[in-house]
Length: 121
Image (tube, rainbow, N blue to C red):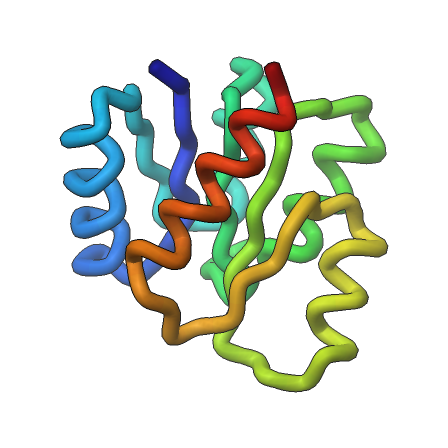
């Protein structure tokens, strides 16, 4: 189906998401720091990147900005525990294609992933 990269420092959440999308026949790679995520994004074009905002070494917003500045074109869905709508706007301005506030229901995330993948076709 699709090649996904999940950049999330919460190992439990990352594993849960990985399992969920693997069951749906997606290929899933994981990164647990911003710098590791950015390196993977620069090595390969993914069908979709799921990117947490708050990450060790390099915040997700900076990963997104650097990736887009370098010409990266993979769709990015960012998620954040910050509730202020200004953060969502900042993420979109940085190049994210969608933003999902935490906590989220996994089916809600799955719906957004489907929409973003359908738009890429």
